[in-house]
Image (cartoon, rainbow, N blue to C red):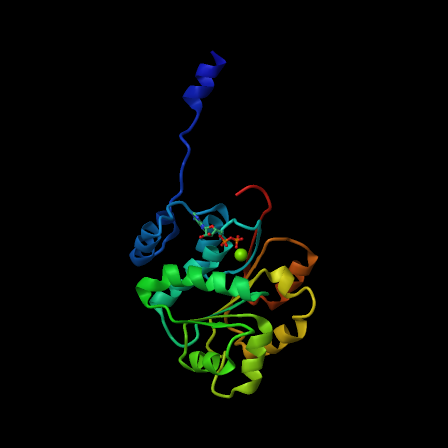
Length: 224
Ligand code: ADP
Ligand code: MG
C-alpha cells in the first residue's frame, strides 16, 4: 500500500535541456549537432548567471563540464556583440589551453569564432600576428601572454569583456602570481570575471578580490 501511494505521489524526473538556458538558436542547433543534449549541473547553474552579468566562482570536479559552462555564455554574448578581443581565458598548462580552444572552436564554428592560442613552445611571431588580428577569444598560459604584453605595443587587452581563470586554484598557487598581476593591470576594470576550479579552498576565495561585480558562487564536489 505504501509503495502504491508513494508511487502515485512521485513526480516524473525533470530533465533540463539546453533550451532552458536562454541560448540562441544557433547555439542550440550547434549543441544538437555535437550530440550535447543535457547540460551538466555546473552548466545548468552558472550559465544563466553569467548571461545575466554576474561574476562567478565555481568549483566542480574534473570532468563536470566546466569549459562549456564558461564558453557557452561567452559565445552567446559574443554573437550579440563581436568586437576586438572579447574574452581572455587563462589556464595553467599548454595542454589545457589546447583542449579549451577545441571546445570553443566546436561550439563557436557557426558564428565564425576567431581564436588565438598563446602558449609556450610555439612561435612568438606567429602568435603575435594572430593577436594583432583581433581574435574574439585568447586562450593563454600566463607566462607567454606576459611575453607578448611586454614585447608588443600593438596588442592590447583593453577591450576584454570576460576574464576566465580556468583551474584558478592552480593559476594562483605560486609561480604565476607575478604574471597574473601584470595581466590584471592590463585589463579593464569593467569586465566579467569567471573563476573555475576543480578544488575549492581558501586560495580560491582570495580571488574574490579580482571580481568586480556581484558574484555567483557554485560549489559541487559531488558526482556530476
Ligand atoms: P572539466 O573542465 O570540468 O574538467 P570539461 O569541460 O573538460 O570538464 O568536460 C569534460 C568532457 O565532457 C568534455 O569532453 C566535454 O566535451 C564533455 N561535456 C561537457 N558538457 C557536456 C554535456 N552537457 N553533455 C555531454 N558531454 C559534455
Ligand atoms: Mg577544465
